Length: 184
Image (cartoon, rainbow, N blue to C red):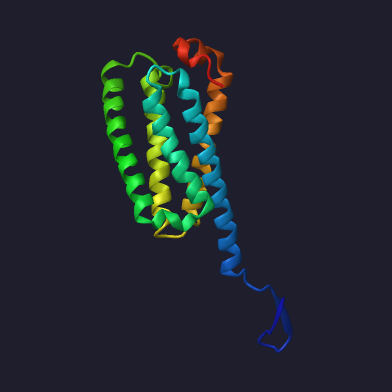
């Protein structure tokens, strides 16, 4: 507590402002936690692809961001490294192209809710990868705080909430192809 004087000379106790280092330390911890959650999600998403008709493709789609995100969790400034950025950019570009192809396929052929279509779930996964890699990449230039930190925390929780919803929704699981029914 600091003491200052009012206009009449009476002392007034005021709180010391929170130091920017303590608030940025909290933001840094939340950013690292968000990256840890996303690394776990991407790793889990890659692991359940073993029963997919094209597992090699989807294991890579999720394993690359799992590794990149885990590295950012352990060492956030690495997102400014040229190697990290190059791998992230190439992977994101491939995910954007895959999203465009799947989006077009869904637009032309979708019969149900897109989460009932395998291509819809694949598209959703590619979008999550692309958005998260973009957020990680931008974190190297600007510190994450305020709205961007809220976005990061929300994005790191959404995949788990969606997975739980899908897992608990028997009607949705009933419409899945057989290879999807054995997921966690």
